[in-house]
Amino acid sequence: MPDLSDSELFRKEVSGIEKLPQDRVPSGRRKRGDRESLALRRQAAEHGTFREESSGFTTGYVEEIAPEGIISIHDTGVQERVLRSLRRGDLRPERRLDLHNHTLEQARQAVMHFISSSVLLGIRTVIIVHGKGEFSSPRAFLKSHVASWLAQSPDVIAAETAAPRDGGYGAVYVLLRKR
Image (cartoon, rainbow, N blue to C red; front, side, top):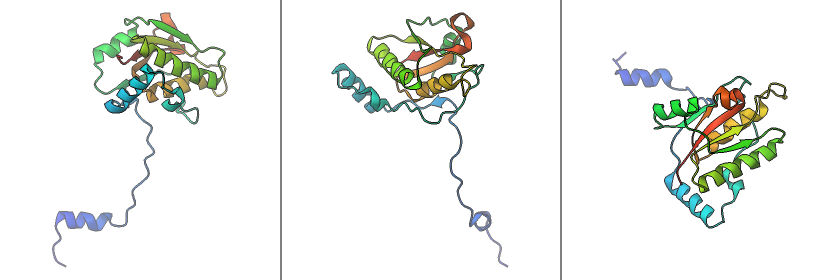
């Protein structure tokens, strides 16, 4: 048998292997949004043609978060110092949204409107109170959806579970993009 090179041996060994489908859950880190599409959305918002439904906040399956689970979402490139300040509550929220007693659809609409209006007002830091969801079924249902919506929003730079004085596991600080 002739001697095969390493690459030929490798190809022979892996022939017939099929690629597995991607089944990993996103880590919470996001790449920066496409600047061009973000600019178009801003322009549409300024001219009153922005449709909140186009943001795509889903109400389908989301990764479950425990009632005492931590929400930590941030774009790549966000400085650790900024994340630490947000996590500690040093960046005081300028607006607050309380989602207690909201249905899932009401909460989705409220979060979309709250984020887009805060960005338009030039507000950088907000807090969303979603509750821990200890007694909901499934547990932490709304909290899990809020985390998913924040991860989907191109206007959100970072989101961190609030400090105990501001609601702890039942609330999340959100750092928004500059307008």
